[in-house]
Amino acid sequence: MVKSDIENSREFMSVANLLAKPELPELDADRFIDIDLFGQDMKANAPAYFSEWATKPPFYATVQGHAHVVICRHEQVQWALRTHEIISAVPHQGWGTDLFDYFNGLPLVVDFDPPEHSRMRRLMQPGFAPNRISRLKPLIDSMIDDLAKVMAEKNGFNMVTDFAGPLMYQILLGGVFEFEPDVWPLFINLSNALELVATVPPGAPKPPEYMAAFDAVYEFCGKLIEDRRINPKDDLVGSVIAAHDEKGAISIEELFSTLVQLFTAGLGTVPATSSNAVLRLLRHPDQLALLRKDPSLLNMALEECMRVDCLGNFRHRFVVKEHVIDGTPVYPGMVAHLALGAANYDPDKYPDPTRFDITREPRDILTFGFGPHLCPGNNLARMVTRAIVSRLIFGFPDLRFTNPDEVIVYGGMPTERFPINVNLSVN
Ligand code: HEM
Image (tube, rainbow, N blue to C red; front, side, top):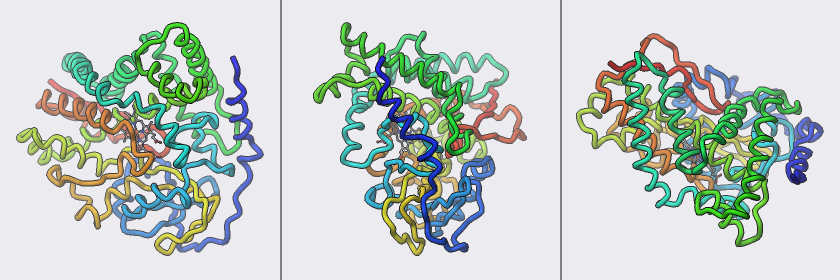
C-alpha cells in the first residue's frame, strides 16, 4: 500500500512546525477574558456565558499559553464564516494547530477555502442526494420503533448510549454507507479515538490507540477502492468514486477523508443534539406540554432547541490578514473561535434570547454553520433528530429523568456540548 501522502501529511504536522509560536504584537490586556474555552464549566454553562458574550465585541482568550480570538455576535460570526481572505479555514503551520488535527494532516473538506473547497465538497455530495435521504426515512422510522420497544421494556436507559448512539451507527454505516455490520467496528473505533487527539500537548505524538484506529480505516479504504475496481456497485462509495473519476482515479486519502468525515461528522452530532433537545424539553414542562398538545409545533420547537443548545460551541478558523473587528485587532497567526452558540443568543437577532419559547420560529440559527461550509448533513440531521425526539416525547407520555437531581456531564470533542449521562425512564 502506498502511504506517501499520508506520510507527507504527518511530516507537515512535525514537531518543529507545531512549536513555532506566531509573533503577535502586544495585545490589550482589557480585551482578555479568563475562560477555559474547552472545559467542563464552559460546556455545562454555555448558555449563561453565551448570553453574556453575545453583545460583546470579539475578545481574546488564552489557550495553551497562546492568545486566540473569540467572535460572538451573530453578524460578525456570519462575516467571519464567509470572509476567508481574512479568516481562513486552511490550518496554518504554527503553534497549536495540532489541537485541531484530528486526521493526521489529511486534506479535509473543512480545511479548505473556496475555490478548492468546492472540489472536496463535490466528492461527498452523493451522500446527500435527496433521493438517497428520502429513501432512508422508512428505514430510520423502523429502526427507531424497534429500539423504542426495547427501551420501553427497560427500567431506565441512557438516551445517548442505548438509544440515539446505536441508532446513528445503523443509519450511517448500514443505511447511508450500506456497509456490512462486520466493518462497523473499524469506524466506531476511530470515531471514539478522535477525542484522544485533544489530550496530547502541542507537538507530542498522537496516542497509539488513535493511530491504530486511524491506520485500520485507512487500510480498509485502500482495499475498498481495489475491490470496487473489480466489482463496481451503485452505492455511496460507488458514487463518491464516480464523482471523482471525472478528473482521474480517487486516492486512498480522498476516499478515506470523504468517508471518515461523513461518518464522524454525523455519528455523534445527532445523538448529542437530540439528547440536548430532550433535556431542554424535560426541564421546561410548560413548553413540553404545549408541544404535546400541538404536535404541529415540532419543527419549530426543534429549531428553538437547537438555537439555545447549539452542539458546537465554537468553530475554529485562522486569521490570515490583520484586521479590526468591532474595535478588536486580530493578527495573522491567531486562531479564531467563531462562537456559533453565542451568536444564537444575540438579542439583535433573537429578542429576549434566554427565553426558551417553542413558538419563537428562530431564523438563521448558526448551529449548522453558515457560508460555504454550511453543514451538508443538516437535512439528514434534522430529519433524524425529529424522528428520535418525536418518538420519545409523543410515544412515551411519562418520559422522565431517572434521577432528576443527577448533574449532566458533558464529553465529546473539546468544542462540543455532548451530554453523556442522559438517563431516562418510561413506564
Ligand atoms: C445535529 C447534527 C449536526 C450538527 C449540529 C452539525 C453541525 C455542523 C457545522 C456547524 C458545520 C460547519 C463547520 C465549519 O464551518 O467549520 C458542519 C459541517 C459539516 N457537517 Fe455537520 N452537523 C450535524 C450533522 C451532520 C451529519 C448527519 C453529517 C453527515 C452525515 C454531517 C456532515 C458534515 C460535513 C461533511 C461537514 C463539512 C462541510 C464543509 O466543510 O464544507 N453533519 N456541521
